[in-house]
Length: 506
Ligand code: PHE
Image (cartoon, rainbow, N blue to C red; front, side):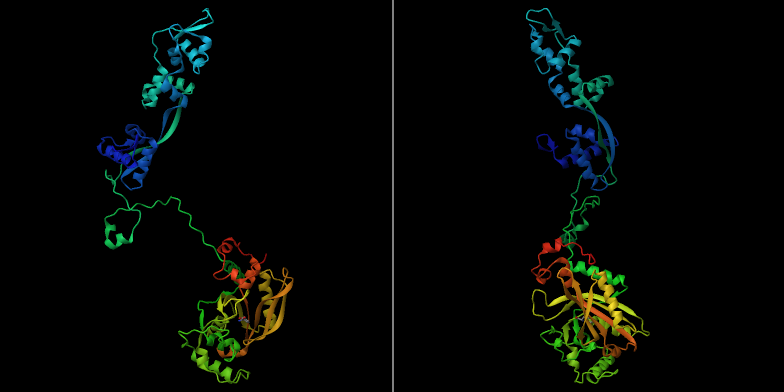
């Protein structure tokens, strides 16, 4: 036996002695409580050893039992140490006796006196000089109470019969307690040596192959895990979720927007935006250096686009300039998600038969802007597109009204505007109750035939569309005045952690 500190045995030593006793014993098993008293350790220590052996797998089997046991109360423990009150009264009496009044002043006096009297260990001389006096009545006493309590303390309860036990209980010297014990037997993988179990599979073990010889500690799926640091959604993502929800409620399908890089062709030319348009300038658009040019285009469609720009067609006179494929090939960071709408509408036009569609997207776009409190070189654009036969400006206004109503924006005004790809075009304004003025909330229009017909969409199909930024409603909703507090390296993460969920219509 290895002893660590005075009287306490190391936990693994308890486990080892438990295994040794199982090995040596002819009996089928061991009781944890008996083992604790045999080893002279606390029962809890044996329970700990049983549990850790159990976690190693099949070494032992442990069955939980509950057993009743008698335990001394604090007063019972005092008596086991120092004797019963009556014995202490007896021993404190000198040959010549003691005045009863003096005896009663002792802490054990009262109870001890009456018990010792009824045991006839002492006698009282009421007519003594100076008041009643107490004398020993026998030469020797046997302190049965102390003896019985000691037996219980030593775990030899058999020495105390039921009558004595209930007498001691009545005197509040004993208590019956229920304790959970284990009945431990050998397990199917019994062994007296406990190999240290690995808790981690390390790269070194894999590289050397040593994992083959190791035993691994089983997962404890009942253990409570460490709470992970929680992730937080950025306000832009919360607002995006709400917009997405609105589009889905209105029956729109999300477009694939997973390409920040786009050719000028899809971003501008397909949208009937002339090649000398100022938006296609270095000052407004980011151009890619490598790869600087895109090479794959649907060539027949590209030819039709070239024609409508340079010569016109479909009832349009075009722009009458030399359309250059080199200009269309230039790779850029897309300046709007309308490039994605163009791709999707072209794809739709390739269908055998036209079907009406409602598309939306919410993703990032890039512009070579002068940065200020409300402008960054990149932002998120929300875009909605509806294609069907005979759609009019009235349909566009109706869809916009429904869409903005769902955002909680009910007062709308439309202002004529210009986009190269829509005719008519309208800027959308809403009355801002907080700012007490009309603010621009979006841009919209009906796509031009010069854009739709070269794609191959049937005559009579019209496409209404609108776009807005995600940042502006987010800033309004979260009361952020400077966009740098919302996006970029100056963002205070605490703002992200603390921002509540977004409910747009309230
Ligand atoms: N593409 C436009 C913009 O970037 C928004 C828009 C989309 C306008 C669709 C009309 C139709 O501002």
